[in-house]
Image (cartoon, rainbow, N blue to C red):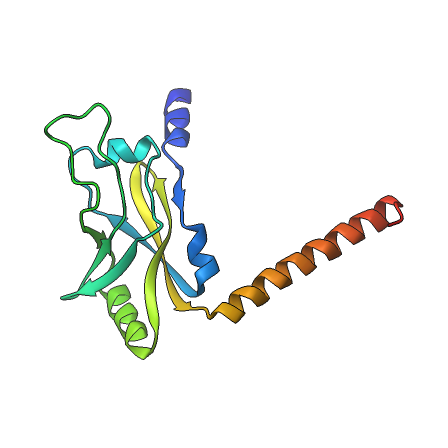
Length: 164
């Protein structure tokens, strides 16, 4: 019984995050989707060498596709290795796809993968509906973060009794 729990815990965890997505886009909503993987892709994912930096998702003919996600070839593979940047199908319910399609039609919005993780031994991707930020919005967000950091630092000093 103890071995099964340990094995299950090791099968979960975040494999990759797209930190740049939250900087470049306002994330309006998120969804979880499964990924259709072939051949040695899951073994390569478990090595943790995946990149979501240039990845995005599209809806074509009522199906959701993940494009430009880089999963490198498996190190111990041979002729059965997969192409690193192939288009991968995402698994979502029909209602979710229909609502996504409606939200994408509304304006300048795009589907961005925010994170890739294993859940019960299956690869899942967290998709975010993002609306692009302007440069001044990005600068304001950076300024707000630094101000909040300074305020927290000053409160910590005051709490500890250190005078600045």
